[in-house]
Image (tube, rainbow, N blue to C red; front, top):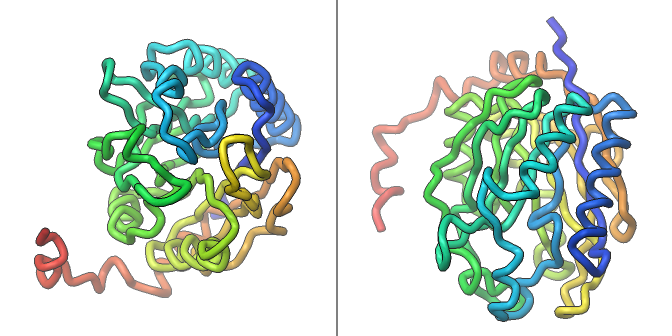
Length: 280
């Protein structure tokens, strides 16, 4: 039986200040709901610039507690008003000096379901993330939402297949990968890795990337957000590489059973042979 979920992702450029950035995302949620979207994920660190292009402790001020902080509370009220599931990639302060790159998940009734903390943290030119974030310690939770079982894997995580598989084993039907990815070597990987993960783990993936060049550095974020199905087929068109865009697509979750019945990747796993993969 068909079970269609209308899902959305939103890519945008930095507005120049936190409050206007929040307002842009509130409007995106309203626009998505008006188009019938039932779930929406924003881009990585959605209410700020991608400040990891520099190492400056002033940006610690963007962090707040989850779920007690004002942004989660604000979007809980919006989710309840609109009846939409929201995935909020944020900067989290667990306590002073203990900071994470985190996504909070809000259900369609406004309830807070939990969070995922980014596991793999880069520290390379233009992506000085270890200055800002501890490696996540949340494992790979899957959230039971009004639209189904949702997982999150954040940006640099996507280069590591283990988390993708953990989300599949936990029953994820849709996995969102909010990102801040710039032009260069990663361009061809952007349309390779997430489709490959969708096939290997037999679920839908929503890939979200911001757009534009920000004042903190030369990273040119190239958008091209999309949804991909468990056969590695793009669902509709890929978004612009330069413009703000709300991507709304219908995902038929019945396809998951169809694909899993055809390709028995979970049945044919050999976990007893994988012990060397966990060695340091």
